[in-house]
Amino acid sequence: MTGNRQELADLHSHLVPAVDDGARTVDGSLDGLGRMMAVGITRVATTPHALGSLTRDPVGFAKWIDEVDDQWAILERAAAASFPGLELQRGHEVMLDVPDPDLSDSRLHLGDTRYVLIEWPRLQIPPGTVPVLTRLVEAGVSPLIAHPERYAGLDRGLALVEEWRRVGARLQCNYGSLLGRYGPAPRTVVLRMLERGLVDCLSTDFHGRKHLKLFVREARDLFEEAEADEAWSILSGANPRRILDDEAPLAVPPVDMATSLWGRVRDLFRGA
Ligand SMILES: [Fe+2]
Figure 1 (cartoon, rainbow, N blue to C red):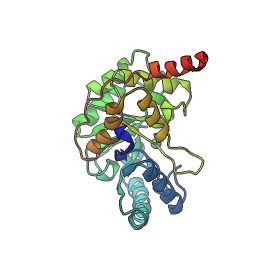
Figure 2 (figure 1 turned 90 degrees about the horizontal axis):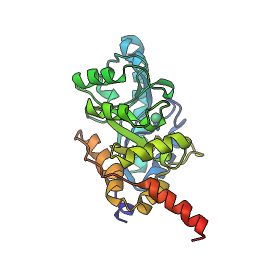
Figure 3 (figure 1 turned 180 degrees about the vertical axis):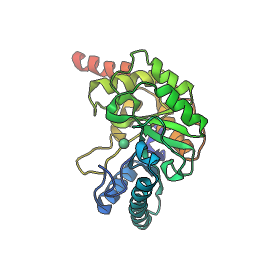
Figure 4 (figure 1 turned 45 degrees about the vertical axis):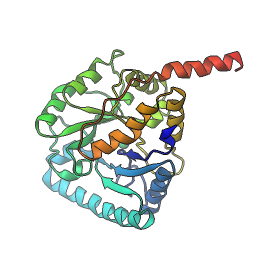
């Protein structure tokens, strides 16, 4: 499969040291980046957690982002020395704990783009997400919703997900969700989204700890079994790159992974 040789890009991880619940030290960050490169990722935008409410407090925001800037500078220097072949960029994962965050600071964006990776608190979908997304788009932001498959209470028909996309949001799902990392419900949702071509890109959401897995190789195997090479290469390579280049993601062909998973189970029972 061509995907084995393809250069991947990843735009959701927590590898700025000691600023959130991700990597604790720069050595931990470098270890994480090395592991990402070992599975073929050559471009990384790492995305510490940020609070939307803090963007409404100029003094608190300045103090906080100064700390992130300092840690980012340390990481950037260390990564350039250790991994000259890696393109490392920054962004944030902004939690929309208020409906009207100020996302104008370019450091909140993915690289130099209009895209901002966002999430909602406590993996619950608050009321009014569509008007919030609409306002962000009107303000010139391209919202990229992190791991939508992990939210409780998504409707089975994915009407809300379609509505998010209709108002201009894009969707990033986690590799680990495909492997049941977050339980059966997110796996069911991400498979259903893939069947309908509703996912724009896949990322690791890697938190830079030794015991955590990336799930990239395992996810690649699933796409291979589903004979979905084209979708894999768009979701893990072309589209995260396009987003980091401030371009619109490509349409992703539907992936029927549920059938291939079922096929595996059936084959097991047949003793194949
Ligand atoms: Fe995250």
